[in-house]
Image 1 (cartoon, rainbow, N blue to C red):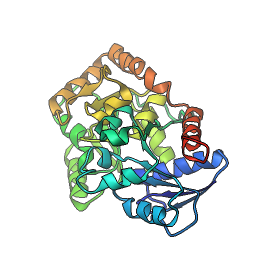
Image 2 (image 1 turned 90 degrees about the horizontal axis):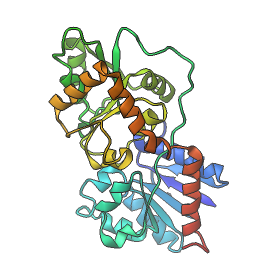
Image 3 (image 1 turned 180 degrees about the vertical axis):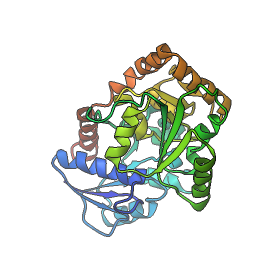
Image 4 (image 1 turned 30 degrees about the vertical axis):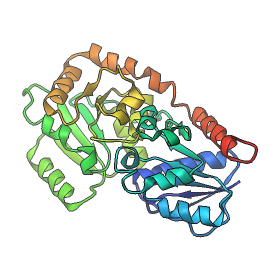
Length: 320
């Protein structure tokens, strides 16, 4: 098939939507399809349109259906779709037009209206282990990585502020990775870096460097207020990096209801307690790694390819 893949993120961006688009294009090509990535639909005669982000791709979906009404559309529901004003801002029309909806974790389906739940398929983002070459974890520091672009929805500075007044003997160091998404975020990150001796902002890094740094970390923190299903959770889990995560559906849908590394959204004091527990108690770190095992079992790239092959079988002629 000739598949169009539409994402609002520009080429060469490290934005999560563009990263997802590039990954999915690779999967679809590995299944034998021709794929074109663009920011909006431009009138091409695609056999299938895959749209990343329902609200931001709404015009492309409508234009494609107007030109090719009998051809299927698959829409990825981003976190800002699922846990934002999707229906209030007219997203229901996009969901009506789509033959299938993709979510990145199981709990996202619960946010849909009944008439749309039957269209939803969950495809967890796979991850390959990081190659083992490179430095070992830093013995002088207990490194805590925070990976993601600096946006308010990520609550990106919670870990930095939770570690301001730790015991003097603590070796905790916070390494923040991600591009700033605004001048206010840049000012805040720079101010923390100059005033907080345990904090360093490394800005955006190429994926391979970010993965190596993540693997060398003793702990990864994801403190988001909302997520559709963050790929960094998969990347940490596949490398056996213990995760501390805000208890919200995007994380629980990946790590499970009973994962022991949750803290309430925005709870600086509880995150501080968990970080100190990680540093002082190797058994707790082992417990976190063990609790990631159910997620690790889902992260094989061949499983993700098979999920996509099954979805395409459903929406192409002769499918459901």
